[in-house]
Image (cartoon, rainbow, N blue to C red):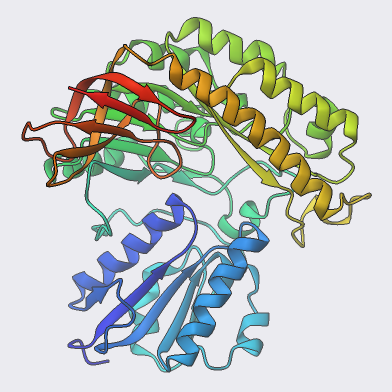
Length: 434
């Protein structure tokens, strides 16, 4: 392929998928290729579509991008979860596509770009992070994601991730610290640690959960502002990890813990660990002052009764989580839950989702009102010419949570961490002054 032509890329899915996209861009740029997110650019002859296949709606978005690029007569390479999940089907259904690369095979992206037909999708995926690759970041702003591991050793009844990513594989502490230092030198103020399950970090390398040790080393990095942890599985939330959250000054007091449900019978059908969730959350809040907790729940899992749903509703009402995400159950082939009966009708799933969202909106509004007149730390996201600054509080993760709007004439820049006084609030966002 002529390297003067640009390679376009379309990114779908979660932050973990975003890191894979950035790794592919890094490989391409290291090999002399120019890349762009503008796939409409007339100089773009090849488009890489990094797909998501976690739930049905995500698949639909990825498929729509593929059809759009077929209509645009571009050379198409499909990478990521969709290629991994439908190994043989896509080759038959999409003869117009020139290349398919699985979730763990993206280091071969150059071969795909330079071949007229290329197929590399492992039957048994095993994700190993390519430490020799420099990520070409799509966005370099106030925060950046760092993938500390990939794959998963659990077998939740609704989830296809272990089939798409393989067993859990952690990166070494020293490699993660080195990457974090590079990001800080580029001006990143916050690093966000991600994996399919962050609390299992190190269990394969160091023979026990070691997220606490990683946080201790990251906390030593000079000029780093914040460290945030997402996707924490409740089972491996050790006392050592609680101590790290409590004592390390750069670790924000924010924890993302997807609990998925509250009723023990539903959790058992989900093949999730059954723990005393109320006691677990209360213990975290007791030991870590001013803790903000984000969690997610699934409504409409097969067999979910009205009584089980009301248990979840009342649990959310009682626990008053700072942030809650609600997903309607998505029926995925090759999962344990696919054949479970009875399946909950779509209209009931939708009703239950909206009922909890309405409840959480009221809870969030009250939580945010409690910030008024208080001073809190915020990280600057954007600076506008009219003196308006868009920031995030420690209680808000990038992309999924709320924002803080600050009016000031002071000269500030993205990545800075500032102290502001909250003067207004709604269900999602805050208004502040310096």
